[in-house]
Image (cartoon, rainbow, N blue to C red; front, side):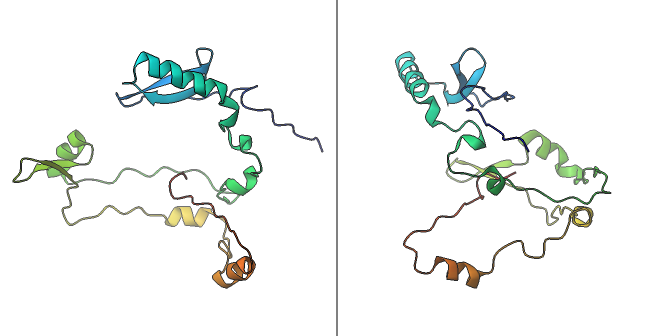
Length: 177
């Protein structure tokens, strides 16, 4: 068994794939021309950009560039794995059909339609025609291994927390994929 030594992301910066940003944002790099990217507002003055980049560069070791840069966090605890059966083969499902009358509108507006109210204010609304698109997860359910106890029982959690002054929990609502 070999001991793994995880080097800091500052010593070995991760290779990242940059995506297109909205027009009000831009990338800056804290090291070289392509290492340690950071997203900042485009409308900052030159003085503000320089000051911000200087502060970010001086504190770049405080930023967690990878999961193992967060001290005291076990990556196995924070990583969600879907257990797939060994004989499972990946599959692709075709996109569901959309009502032809609203297909062009949805394509043009990115799924939203803008409606003008009495006060000449534009309100984005989602066009609902009575039909809802449902995703069939039965094939995915068949391919995954069953976990009979995925979440702890509430009474067990309360027993563990009893008598403790502080408790901490991890909320995955804003950042899971």
